[in-house]
Each structure stands twice: as C-alpha cells, then as structure tokens.
Image (cartoon, rainbow, N blue to C red; front, side):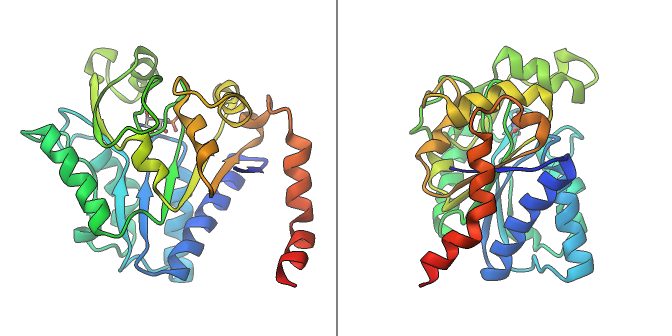
Length: 263
Ligand code: GLP
C-alpha cells in the first residue's frame, strides 16, 4: 500500500485527480470505478477542470459506481445516480451509454447485482477504482463484517453510517436502510485502487486500516492485500499514523529508487 500524505483537502483532491487523469491518458477507454460522498467532490472538480482546461478526454471512458441506496430513484437528489451526474458526468464529455451506477429501484435486486458484476467483466474489469472511506471503515457500503470475498449485493447499513449520512437528508428517518454495493472482493479485483480520506473524523479509522490488522471489521483494511493500492490523505486524516516519517521518506527518495529500477 502506498501512503501519500498531503497537506490540504485540495492537495489530496488534486493528487487523486492526477492518478485518474494519468490512467485515462495512458488508456483512453479505461474502465474507472467511481465513489460518492463528500470526500471525492474535490477530485471530481479537478477532473472537470482538467477536461475543460487541458482537454482530458472522457469520450471513451467507461465508469462503474460502487453503490446506490436501495429504494431511491435516479432522480432523487440524494441518490448516487443524481450525485454523479450533478458533480461529474454532466460537466465532461462522457458517453451516457458508458456510465453504470447501480439502480435503487430495481424489481429484482439480486438479479441486478449479478448483471452488474457481469457488465464489469464484459468491460474487461476495472482499471482504476476510486474509493472514499466511511467513519466505520467501510468502502462502498461494505459495512463492518463484510467478507473480503463479497460480491455486488444488497447490504444493510450500519447505524453509524445511517447517522453519518443523515446530514444529506431532511431527517434521519429518510435515510434508506439498505444499499446495493460492489463487494470487497469486487473492489479488490480492480487493477489499481486509489482511496482518498480527509478530515479529523477519519483519523482514527485511517490508522486502523493502514497500520492495523487485516480485519473484516474495518473493510478498508482489505486494501493491504492489494498489489497496487494508493491511499491519499490530507494532514487531518493522517495525524494518528505512526509511520509518517517512513511514508515521507519514500516520497522524497522516489527518484533515487527510480534510478535503480531504470538501470
Ligand atoms: C458513503 C459511501 C462511501 C463513502 C462514505 C464516506 O457511505 N457509500 O462510498 O466513502 O459515504 O463519505 P464522506 O466522504 O462524505 O465522508
């Protein structure tokens, strides 16, 4: 796991956007996994800027979102479908046919989950998956206890997640209790993973999943098993890390290592 320590929220967002932009430039028809929540907003803002100012081309990009609340229509303003169109898709030249976000109003959710997994496979798998993290350590909506082998399925939300996400709804009673989410196993199959975390409230969970034991009680710790996982934190989210000095040492000596690798 590569841990990148940045100072501000904007630095974190720009670093994540650069990772995604590099992937798209290298492979214009990249399959990108996307996340919602307030943390990736700055990353999407920077991607939009890169599209407008530097011509970053989304026309061949294929996207798969991690999750969606069960029971919300795509037009509901708190649905993740609405969020993605509002904060990214409508501002770039993506082909709507290439966009995949789980649907919250499906008749047969189980069948839909199988279909979603098949679509990811048909697209050739995910090249780069962007993730945020819940305060209970979840990725997507893989709440504590989710198997590391889990696939796209319906998940019951934890009380903590319902409380955390109530800020987006008029009242806590309106927060859905179920969601469709890619599984931890689905996420781990992405060829590259970029997780962003920001703010004091994420500091305790960041030290747990980066430097703590591998446990399904903190599903983000599964990233320790991934060969190409990059974690980008702002200063507030990183305050409890014990090995900060080492992570910065790696950053500062990257060019030296590269010299050896290029020989
Ligand atoms: C939701 C999403 C997650 C996201 C998390 C954190 O639960 N399902 O994908 O990482 O919120 O959100 P925020 O970035 O707003 O803290």
